[in-house]
Length: 321
Image (cartoon, rainbow, N blue to C red):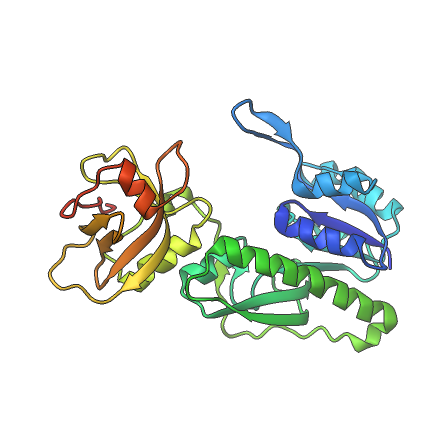
């Protein structure tokens, strides 16, 4: 089965690697244009482009697939004669002519159990919401946002202390396996693959992450604060500034929920030391922060951080407006 692959970040690169190891030939790749990165702002290829070039595949990098700008790309895809287009975290909207270019359409690897968390950031939003389960769906794409019928859904638990980054890696591996499973079934017997419509109930949207969301609101209960910190690990990283250093936010990682603390103002530091770590009061309960990072510094275990940075019980973190 001839495959054109469309994807950009590491999540998609894992799927491309799985396809390259399968019996389905990848005949071309779409990925986003190279982006400036690092202090020198040099153009850097996406992980998918790097993998594709290593495999000797033709790579298309349009800035858009819409309108006249997309016509040459559509023609190039058609010339590759794909049986199916596989999409994973591509980042560009596919207009209807692209959705229709292959006989089997476009199959998307989506990192949630649809219809929950349609949209751009399903992994982060699932962790932030305190969900106990998520998964991978292989979905046939249509004009609506992640509304298409599902061929395969694979659930997986979200572990209580798991960061979004760790969950991302597990889901990337799961998605890479799932897409090959579906393609194998389609190649063997297309009629054996049932694309089930999504339920009309339980729809939620995983809106794009805004950097301003990363500020911790200590007025939330401890579980919500911990989920927030896990959700934004590793990027953009939850952060909070001490009241005495309001312009120097500290990045926070590895939270542990502690028992209820009465009478402590949200954001106040209850303990700070190499042995006890950093304990912060929340609206209900408290959290122990396991790792911290100053701007420009390394991510450190709380004990190591506190040996080099004076933080005292009784101090407080600022609350967002």
